[in-house]
Image (cartoon, one colour):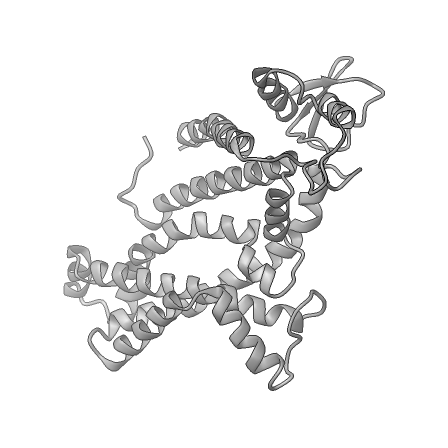
Length: 329
């Protein structure tokens, strides 16, 4: 397993660079610049801005400069070394994953902005996924065990409803009913436990629906497998068959879904953060794209891509614990 993990970790580096390169190319292909405005700048000022940020260089040099920022390079003693990963080798200080300063938020580095806004998205994302797991697993297991019953039809109907109603519709409905109607929770903004209830419910709805459907499908397939019939033939009661054998195999589709879903939740969900005015990472990402803030956009995209690959690696490792038939060669 160790060699498998090392191979996957090595793959993360070129894949992250590929994602960053594609993102950088798309930013450069889009019209406009971060200093564009309704009133055109004087040519002299525009030239000074281009010279300051290296935009007067050929496109190839601009790309290499961007890669040099996010890969390891030496830093002088008089330069700031407060962002990114740092390590010392003799008299040299090497700096990695430093995306520089934001072009719109003057004096603020990209790494600092991500660190400042990530806790909001992470808090809501983790709580939402835990709630989705509880609801989705319960509904999916009951639907599979009571196939073609009212429990099955009812839970799957609710799951289809959760998949059909988008967040930007479900969120305002919750606000109208629970915040502006019953005055139980604040309608927006961050602050206190009550402020996260509606965003968590809104965000968990679609994930609970996906998990319920995946759990039902996985459990139905496992309950009809040969080793479940063998366990029953040996005289094991239905509870033991379910808890010791069926659930481990039935949860594999849910585990596969968990990797990218949890990474996306931790990085921020734009719609929910917009609806409830939460200063999370998704909200900042949209602002960076609208502002053409290239370092901030690249930093968030790199963070999200690495997060997805790391979570997918954890998911692949967990397969071996859930299903003994899976081997890592």
